[in-house]
Image (cartoon, rainbow, N blue to C red; front, side):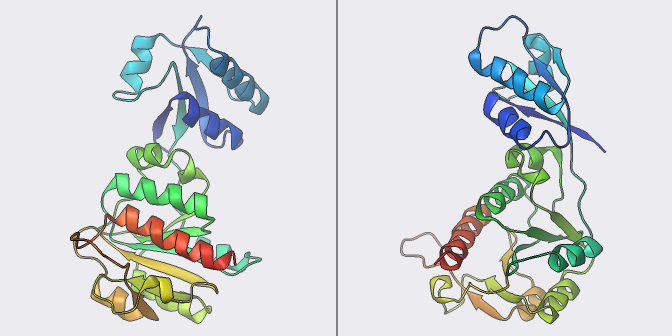
Length: 246
């Protein structure tokens, strides 16, 4: 399982407060008088994560371009789940399903941002196809800021087959499409639900669109024709969360 690095006081604190799952060790500048770093040291000791000293140049080398603030965590990239894991996830739910499906998202920054939003909105699993889509890479995990280890990430061999299976389990599939006449804000997103978002270039593929129970669009009042998939996903998930919280 490959390693990746989490840099910065906030990101490392978040990972430690989550129990340190997947963390191998903390690297920290020695003799740096910073109350926040001392708190991180205490957190690491509390969850049993080893801490080693590292000079600023070594931290810079390990985390190029990251404002690490004198601390970094070496972590494992989480392993993606499979169709069998998705069956277990749905079977263990004590509340209506709330899932996100990304059909062909290829930008790791977009996937990382979607994982963060999934974590914040309480999504129970994020489903993607294995082919022609980005998986859990170090860049994805860095952007996700710990959410990659908290939100179940499932890669499936045949997305259309998985969508049909979800429908058989009573999950309502709502796809987003810029040309759909119905507004997402008027769709019922309160029951067992999977929101289906398209990729960056071509949106939903034909088979994916045909599997959906309904299509909806985000209202566009200005001159912009479409939104970045991570932004659109955030809006859609929080509209669903709003409805489900009423």
